[in-house]
Image (tube, rainbow, N blue to C red; front, side, top):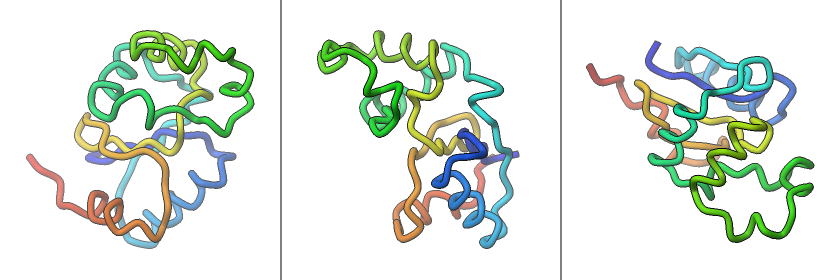
Amino acid sequence: MALTVYGIPTCTTCKKALQWLDQNAIAYDFVDTKQHPPSRALIADWVAELGAKPLRNTSGQVYRSLGEEKQTWTEAQWIKAFAANAMLLKRPLFVQQGKAIAVGFRPESQALQALLTLPAEG
């Protein structure tokens, strides 16, 4: 499968993204990060591709419960935190052919739509 979507099934934004993918006949695999947390190595790859800041779920309780020191954390510290609690990861996260291509979902985002509808390479 060329596209993998990481998120949690109860997340409203994930539901909207999956519905949009279904409506546009885009095949994907869904990984529930609550049931199957991503490995530290996989998270490190995502951070290398997108950066730690876009991957932060700043609206979640877990993020808000972190101390003020989170403002000065390095990418390595964020990778450790994401690996310790996948709820810190913004969702959904789109991975195509093993490479993180986008995080979050807004159905009106033409840039995201273009990324998701590109033909798979290989």
